[in-house]
Image (cartoon, rainbow, N blue to C red):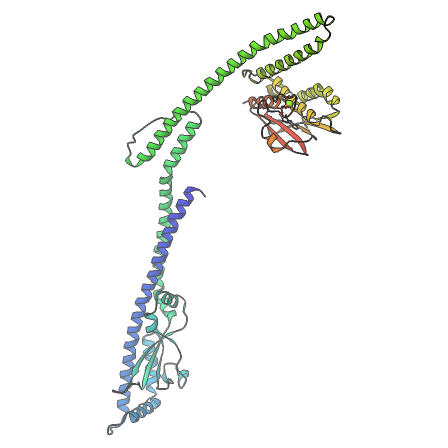
Length: 493
Ligand SMILES: Nc1ncnc2c1ncn2[C@@H]1O[C@H](COP(=O)(O)OP(=O)(O)OP(=O)(O)O)[C@@H](O)[C@H]1O
Ligand SMILES: [Mg+2]
């Protein structure tokens, strides 16, 4: 993942976590607040109702001598059962507190509904609901769950009893709805959500800006490294004026030093290379001339002593062979290290390839190898050093024939084509192919697997392609044969 994306992700997710936690805490505090208020209101409403009931009872109780608790209870129950106004009162109370209370019931000792704001409840068992009080004192998760998602009502009970008696005679049951609660806190929640969203958006923007700021020095260092690798000088400026950038400036300064050292090293290496090249070419020339002389003298010697000392013939042959081998080594070395002076002309690559095939025909027929050539669909010309490319192609056709030497039905196929402004010359053989370890080394000068090879051929071909801004591709595996493709631009830049 890109550094920039990681930085952005990190800052945004941090803010998102904080915003979410604050949001949930806010919902809980809203809910808690509301629960406390609802409890308070229910208690007040319950007490009001109880005092109304007490009023009704005292209005309807005929003056009588003091009654026992049992008799009082019976009396109260009788009065409430006959009281038709009370139900209206409950309906009215529930209506007054609409939006909070959805139902009010008066329950007797057995938990049966004596009077209700909902007529159908009369005489039924009291509806079973969770206690609002319990919800208020339960834990955070429960509260958020109840306030956020619950659909069942919660109850509060307010008792009405006779002094000195443990059990209440009646209980007022008030039911509140969490759905109504949600409606109440929704607007508040909405504004909180909008604020959170803005916070998140601001975080995205700020994170983007700060990621850019944080990455700017890294980009600068990247540029400095680019400058160094392309060999251009890097301006040295240290210490930095800007205090915040001091660490980065120090790194840039050191990079600059490194760049200067590298440039120096590069210059040294170039000088050294050219010095070694000149020296080696000099030595090679010095060897080449005496070698030619030796070869000539050997032939003279051979003629002179042929009749007198016939047994010397074999010795002379051996020396002559060695001289020729040495001469070849020196010549290929000089070829490989020839100074880069290209002789650029415009020519037809198909014609060049056909010429190479003709040159190779005798060697091919000797090795019992068939040669085939296919030209391009439409003739085209290229600009380049004809001699170099010819030598390069000759080397790979020669390798292919050598690889096939001895095998039955050997075939070397050469195809010339134009592929997107590149001239491509592919040479395929159905020979033994190469193992990976061989394939990795074939362009190394002097690498060979042949007894009489010098390992120069492909190095020369590769150099020819390099000089033409082209390349050479190899497709080869043991048993599947080998294809070598020369590829270079048809026009020189
Ligand atoms: N068509 C091919 N099939 C199999 N192996 C090949 C093929 N072409 C090249 N090679 C391998 O690559 C090696 C290097 O090839 P290169 O032409 O550079 O040198 P060489 O042929 O050995 O010697 P010379 O200098 O005479 O050409 C070869 O020795 C051979 O192992
Ligand atoms: Mg070769």
